[in-house]
Length: 164
Image (cartoon, helix red, strand yellow):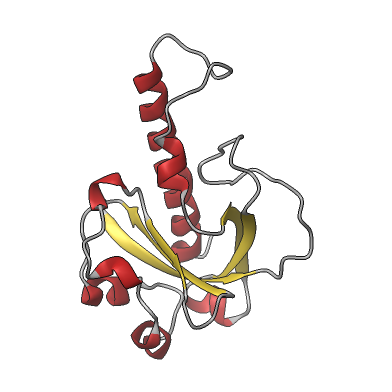
């Protein structure tokens, strides 16, 4: 992912008001130098309100920022993340819901997705395959996982941005 500044992140939000974007608590490690080359998207939970989260996802080489709301955790069931689809890291996946951009969002339309609560998908897809996943070319499998994560996360962001 291309490194982003505080200003670029705030300007990227498509489903937040100017006030919400201005007041967003950016990731604590943004100034400490994130490892942007190992991120497929930037996601974080608001330190002051754990029910609020943010994600900035590259869509057509442009950052699309999303304001997300975490659902209340009522069950402890394991489930698969819709973005990275890691079948081994299933214990900390939560439902995030986001208001659609534009008129659709103002009418109350939203979209939800199941994602790792700590937005750790980039780490999961870069994990070397184990014996059950097999394959003759483990690096090709990792590359395929990365591309699929990018495709699924950007499809979600595109749907929110475009209101479709």
